[in-house]
Amino acid sequence: MGSEEEEDERRAVVVQAVATCVAAVGEYCRAYMFKQPTRFGDDERARFINSIIRATDRDCVTQLRMSREAFFLLCSQLREKTLLRDSRNVSLEEQVVIFLHTVSYNVRNRVIGHRFIRSGETVSRHFHRVLDAVVSLYPVYVKQAGQEPPTDLQTNQNWASYFQDYVGAIDGTHIPTHVPAPDHACFRNRKGALSQNVLAACSFDMKILYLLASWEGSASDARVLHNALTQTDDPLTVPNGKFYIVDARYAHSPGFMAPYRGVRYHLQEYRSGRAPSNMRELFNYRHAQVWNAIERCFGLVKGRFSILKTAIQYAFETQVKVVIACFVLHNFIRSDIDCGEDLHAAGISVGEVEGEMSDNCLSDTSTPIQSPVRSPAIPTRCSPREKTVKSLAEPLFRVAKSKWSSQMDQVLCNKLLKQIALGRKADNSFRREAYQVAAEQVTRQTGVPVTWQNVQNRLRYHKREYNVVRDMLAASGFGWDNERMVVTAPDEVWEEYLKSHPRAARLRGKRIERMDDLGVIVGSNQATGRYVKGSMTMAASSSRINRDLNETWTELDDDLDDHVDLSDDTLGDSIGTMRGQFSSDTPSMPNRCYRGTPTQTSATNHGRSGSGSSTKKRQRPP
Image 1 (spheres, one colour):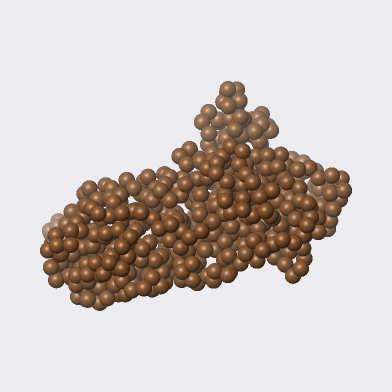
Image 2: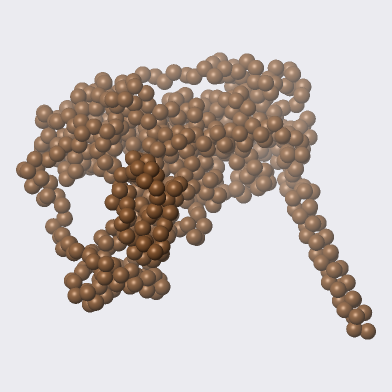
């Protein structure tokens, strides 16, 4: 009797499980496979797209951040390079419009879907395809500096004597990012926001020469620059005998010219009649004028593409691709068209962007002070008098130096571990009360007077030491001896490693106590660079993905919810008519391939092969 009841119970469970699975499959098919269009809005969609790319250049620039000519040239290049193609119901031009409108105004997926009368899946799919296609253009529009000096510097006497071998300016900018909670610590920058540190080099006319994204926000600018110089796929190269302009956050070294320290530098410090008063101030003033090109470039890109101002909830690799795509589009716009109207559409006044250059640079003929020409290869040493003057700019409050012993380090580590357990560590650093409590504990147990500033400086020393050890252990041939607490490696491995990492020499054979505790205290909040990929690698990957999709693109991959018969597709009719009208108004415009009916395609001789297209660029006015 009992066995029959158990059998009935098992049968009921099986029936319930099968019914649940059938219901789940049916719901999935209803939601994703047998979709029905929510609105039959071909006319409405056609009117909206035509109002952008058929109307005036001002409307196109306002919505897409580029003129009609630049838009059609971009579509032509994406088609000719087989990076993108039409689908059955979505033309290539509509795909590009969706992408540009999204990155220009940071519009959400559902809003774009409602605006273009497309499903969210369709918008997302085509957004990522256009994103990969634009990233694939990185090698075409982002090229590193050559031996030719900038003509703008040669024609301006204020800079020619100081920066005759200048090729560009380098700086980093932080782009807000969205990452999982375990990665918040290493992505939190010094201002407390989650971001990725993006390194860029630009020419004097604000064209990007090099780009390296995907570094964590806690990474220093100098570390990102070092990684850019040692990249395997696309390293930053400095032409022989040339140099880049950098600010004081970078070292004055061969190939990179930094300003004098301890001397006023920023342009706002020289306003209101406060002219340079000595040779070094004049040099820093000229240096700031030239270096300001990279700051104006960052402001222009972020003003043009609002998606870079907020953290977007994509996968981190997609966020990096968005950054690369925006800078590629920036170079594309500045290479092929005039940039006056797109500045206005980006919400940035031409006077605001070019004001620093015109007011402070081109029209500057004041201050007949003879300025020294600072060599970019050999840092200048200060004389005793200059050192005295420089010391006046340093903080008046100096923290007393303390000689730390192993006992003090042991007390400090124990107390900081307890502070972590109490929740007094906020991602990248401890709170002020944690430093104060640790300083009091060290003073009480060792008898050595220690301030919270001493504790903070000692912790910075441990961070640097831990990072060096961590990098060594990640390299091939190194190991860790738990008994002796030292890093072990054969002599030939040490010699080879020290050639590129001279700082590790002081740790050869040195006993490093409590390595595990240091990993808990300082190791979990350091930028590791594990997400870093060169822009060339990202471009090659995106190009390969797009070409594979184009080869395997079938009708099953088309938009299932927008299955309107294209023979009555008003969008194809109206855009096809618009193409002829626009081409007649602009004879130099290359022919475009739009999705239309087979009759239209054969009549107008605009097939998918893109025959008759031209990639001739309009020359920028002098």
